[in-house]
Amino acid sequence: MLFSASALLAAAAFVGEVAAHGYVPFIRINGTTLPGWDVTKDGYANPQPLRIVRATKADSGFVSNPSSGEITCSIGNSKLPPGPITAAVAAGGTVTAVWNTWPVGHYGPIIDYIAKCPASGCSSWKADSGSPWIKIGQKAYDGEWASDKLAKGGFTHDIKIPRNLASGDYLIRHEQLALHGASSPGGAQFYPVCIQITVTGGGSLVPQGNLNFPGAYSANDRGILFNPYQGDAANRAYVPPGGPVYSGLQF
Ligand SMILES: *[C@@H]1O[C@H](CO)[C@@H](O)[C@H](O)[C@H]1NC(C)=O
Image 1 (spheres, rainbow, N blue to C red):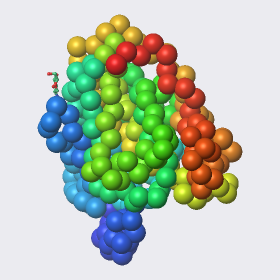
Image 2 (cartoon, rainbow, N blue to C red):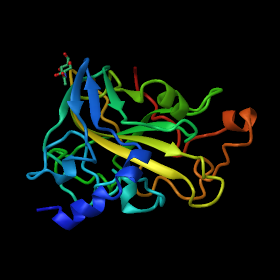
Image 3 (tube, rainbow, N blue to C red):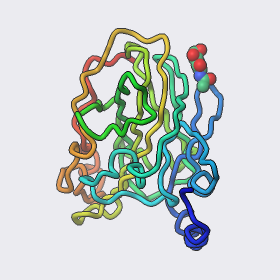
Image 4 (tube, rainbow, N blue to C red):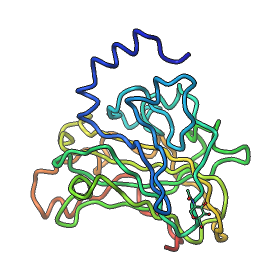
């Protein structure tokens, strides 16, 4: 049993806070909506439901230390067992993350990574060692922050799966990085979300992972310690953390 009655009551007291942050209760693939991880319900169900979005602790707060173990797949990822299921998506297809909410003004980029799960599958794999990750996409500022576009556009973000990616089981690490407090050290807010997928009909690209979480980010990276209130020119010069998108991906 993962949650006691007292934990339930304590969590109920924080419902207001939960509503203030974002999480991903739904995933959309091929026009079909699948359950993601609903922090208000799924952690309290017994047995815990199997979800393609990895469990997080029963709040939707952010990770503030980019070197912590929670940076991989969010708060509590290291404690709660992920569900042994994946969602099938064709190579070249789209996985849409549907956030419950996101405030306009929580400025920042949206960054997507992927890691090939080991032969034993995604379900018991923490993906936090051996640099398994590559960056497959990122959106930052082009006159408007990616986060504001999401907040004004139905809270959705499309994750494009490269069409030349080899078939198999993968973990997506989809992340919003809120910079509204990031002009002081430790002020950036990370909202990583891990999604378990099976890529079908893929190509020949077996990516050599080149990033580890934790490890890829540090608190003083120029994309993490950043003041988003310096105006348009400075925001256009913003470079998200985690390096460039992996080369050789075809979309
Ligand atoms: C999406 O479409 C692909 C290609 O037709 C299929 O393999 C996959 O099972 C579908 N996934 C879902 C979740 O419907």
